[in-house]
Every structure is written in structure tokens, then in C-alpha cells.
Length: 436
Image (tube, rainbow, N blue to C red; front, side, top):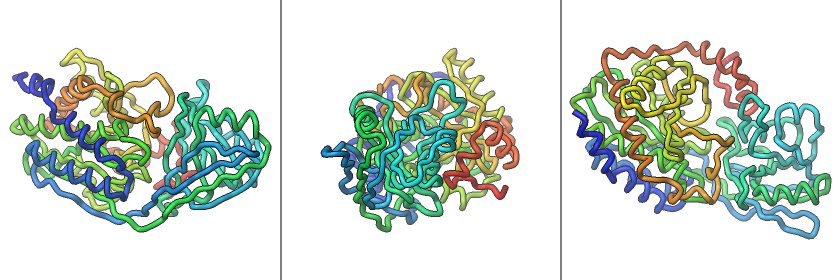
């Protein structure tokens, strides 16, 4: 009965797919590379034994980077544009706002300034403040430019998109700088006039979701998901090549155990996640949400050995993870809080049971993610295989007919967002989907 474990632990299916994805190069949303990666994933799912592997294509706002620069005094400082920054040049005094917490913007006049903020938060703060929230606090308070300083050392400027669903291109030019460049700017030029310039090609583009399925033809389905796209500055091994490799590995493992599946399993590798969850929003808009029993979304797996599953207040998802951890005497961290980032959120926000599967981490923020350093040699096949064993059993467990996973009312999700102090930030970034 446990032969499948040995098969996964000796499998190269997921790791081979990860290598194929990182070797594509640029997988930016709307690029030829993202399309190539989606086609590779479609073919890998078919080869793994999943049925009806296909692409679902949709239009998106395209953005391709050109040159960017910060001119300060008689120096030019290294930087990279944040995706969906407008193509614009501004000059204004630099204002170093430290962590860029909401109260920092409330207590400081940033109007007509270029604001610089760090990518982390202090230990004492009770929640993570996302890059886009800091950006839109700057916009709302009248700043004319935005500089996003990495807190990770190593001369690594961070990337990450701006813009909203309603206005995909941001309102003020935005660039990322390394920890070291940020320190230099703060030391030498805080309060002095600097120039930030971004060149970008803004155009129409297409992205696509990859879809396939296994198991019986039931009305209900369990979704196993990831996102194919990555930022254009690196291989995107951790974010999120590993997640898509996991989906392919799970497809192969579940194909071998298909007679155990009591609910249909649908695999979806979304496109255009990094620019606003565009692919998963398209999927959610067209889906029968009541028919979705659960969403298991891998985004951040394999970075560290222990799985962490954010369960969004769905007790059945937490209980299933605990049962699997106990069954195999292997740790799985469960986090009951709400996490409104990554593709599960497009469904969870309407009460669909969903979890965000990633790895435990002691550090704040993305680490190597969203930088040039997001490369494959930092990951291990062993970790992918160990986590695939646990997640295979997790999906089989969720697909059992006698496992009931109640949907939640959107009002309950709203209550969680308010109680966890996430609602204000989502309203600032234009991500609040509710009427009130």
C-alpha cells in the first residue's frame, strides 16, 4: 500500500519540470517565455497521466522593462523598475521613510517627494505590510516617485508589481534598489533632490492558464494549483517554478493512485499571478464556486524542508493536514489566519475552502525571491519529493467522500480580514472586493 511513497521519493518528474521551467529564461506575464512555460506544463501534465491538458488564453496588460536610473548629485545609482510602473521621469527631494508603515505616512508629509521604504517590517509590528500597500500609501499622500529598498543584503534590488485591477499601470514611477544602494541614498541624499526615471513598453498581451484533470467525473472537484509566470529578472525557481513542478509531481503521483480518488481533481497552473492574480481571477469569474470542494495552492514550496499550510479559517483543511502529519510522523505547520496573496485568494475571498501551501521560514519577507538570486541551485530535489509525498496524501484525503469541507460566507472572510488588520491595506491597494 505504501509503494507510491518510494515511487515519489525516486521520481524525477517534478525536478525535471523545474529545470525545464528555469531554462526558459524570462517567464514574465504576457511574454513568449510565459507561453512556452505554459505549453511545457500542459505537456508535462499530459505525460504524467492527467486528462484533457489544455491552455485557456486571455488578454492582459503587457509591460516590458527598458532602462531605469536614479540620478543623485553627480552619481548614478543602480536600480530596476517595478513591473507596471509608468514610463516616466521625475525629480524631487528624496524622503527616507524607513519601514514605510501606515503610521509613518500619517505622521510625515510626503507630498511632492520621492519616497524610499524598506521591504521588511520591524519585529514589533503585528502584520506584514505588502509592497503594494506601501506604494499606494505613497500615492495617496501625494508622493511623485517610489523607491523600494531590499532589506536582504547582497546587492540585490527587489522587483514586484504595482498597479491595480482597475488601473493596471501604477500612478507614479517605481524602482527597486538593493539594501546597499538604499543605505547609500539615505546616508548621502536624504532630503536632497534626486531624479528617478523609468522606461517601459506598455502594450497589449496575452497570458494563459494550464488545466487538466484526474479522477471520477464528479460535480465536486479539488483544485491543485500554482502559477507559471515569474518576474523577468531571474529564473523564478522558488517563485514559482517549484510550485508548478509540485503540481506536475502531484499529477504523476495521483495518476498512479487514481482509483483512490473519490472526487475529481483539477490541476490549474495559472498565468499572470505576479501582476495581480489575473489568471486566477479569470478562472474564478467563470467557475461554479459551489462545486469547488477545496483549493490546494503551492506557491513557496521547497524553499525549506517543512511545509506550512495557511488554512484561512477552514477547520477541515487544518484537520486534514494534521491527520497527514500524524499518519506519517512528519511535521506540517498549519496557520489558521487569512492570507490574501497568491492565486488561492481569488476563490477563498468568496468563501471557497482553500489553502496556501508554502515552506516555513524564520525571516520576514521573500528572501531570495523577487531578486536576481531566485535560482535553482538554492533548492533540493529531496525537499520537493518529501513535500510531494505529504501533499499527495493531503489531496487524496481532501478528495474522500466522507471528508466534508464547508464553504464560508464572504461576511466571515471580511470579519477575519478586519480582525487581522488586513482590510485597510487591501482598500488602499484597490484589492478590496466587497461592497462594504
